[in-house]
Length: 95
Length: 484
Image (cartoon, rainbow over all chains, first blue to last red; front, side, top):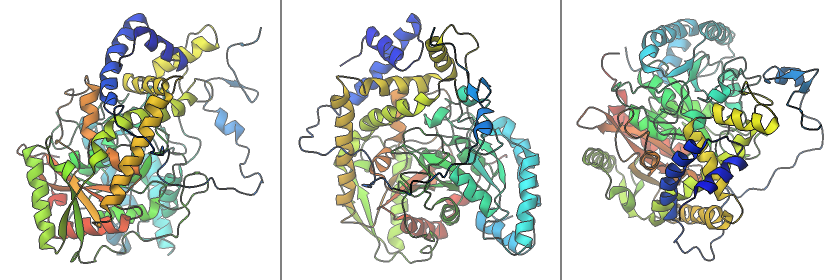
């Protein structure tokens, strides 16, 4: 199994990473060497094996429904690329 | 001077023979002298370190100090540290001053351990050589033309070069154990869930685990006592009784059953490493341990399964870096989509982008079952192998890596060759078990060799005991690189 140039461009779009045509071709080569490594696991018979998502079989903890987080909006927004009046600024999305 | 272990420094402080300020100044001097060549630290801030040292001395003077109060430590740059630059080795976070502390950092601060600085690492912990760091590669203190391993390469190198007595690290597929082996130090990856991931910048959340890197097993136990413990802010933190990981250090090993996985001693293991590990096994027999062969037949699939699961989780975790709330934003853009795509293209390095793309692919429609679910099933098989093996033995022993430190630039163009350096460590993360690496010799070129001890779940105290008993009768862990 190998991935095509179109696959690379499609997943780059899904991942929101810009790739030029030249980069896409290089990326395709590299990804295909990695997929050849991954390929060896596909032939293994895993009928009846339960997928393991996590190292510990644990349930999510519940806690009382009370506010625990203090309001630190101002501090957190000091690290934003662009913030104003307590809002994060992004390019206009609705005309 | 004897090896400056945490235990030794703690004793100096307790006896009033040194202050935390003096210790920190010594280490900062050494960092100033050695770091320009080794590049183990991304950020050093002597003023901040000394403020923390003064506070630590006051804490000890007040009688409220604990064993490691005043002992300095370095932190891998993926632990968010309030007021310190926290870059994760990435351009994406090159200007990120964390507004809060990771749980691990908070624990060390509460103990009164001054921070010597933030250590270099592979970008977002993705790499095995430290060469993917935006801040340039770390050099191995044993040979500056070679890599220190990764991703916790800065932490390993700074301990090996005595720029810090210990450091924090994190291990997703071997990132504590592999650099510990390549730099000749001792490092431990705890059972998944023992050390809170709160404030530890996420790579693959079901595998990531913070842990100690130090000179000795005893020091790893002392530091794990500080780092581990329940934290409600990490949904996967385990609620367990507080334990003392040093409690079994002095237990004799008579009757200990050491499992030797036949898959770890086959082809691919170079002569010097095979020999060093064999000699360690002989040493253990002299200490009264028995050995038994065990099988981990599915471990050969661990690299393949890992390179589906870890990128899948990474592609999700790293979607948060979008140029909106924190981190890098591209200077020129036309609309929101353009901003996202350019920000991520410019902010992430090549290896990180590759893994995001792999992860996006294996999670996408039509491939999910064939890759992601299949990899999760293999994860179950790999974990089951360990369960079966631990019915026949108490600990598992083998090499940490198939080779010693390789040359800078040697593997960076070949991702698959790089991935295979973690062939003995990855299965441990997939199963969620504790594992550690400790020095057990040198190859013909004078480069350190590490052996790996794997414990059953929550077996940290046991493997630390097994490692400590070995370090009592050997001196590999006390060897230091020349010329530093």
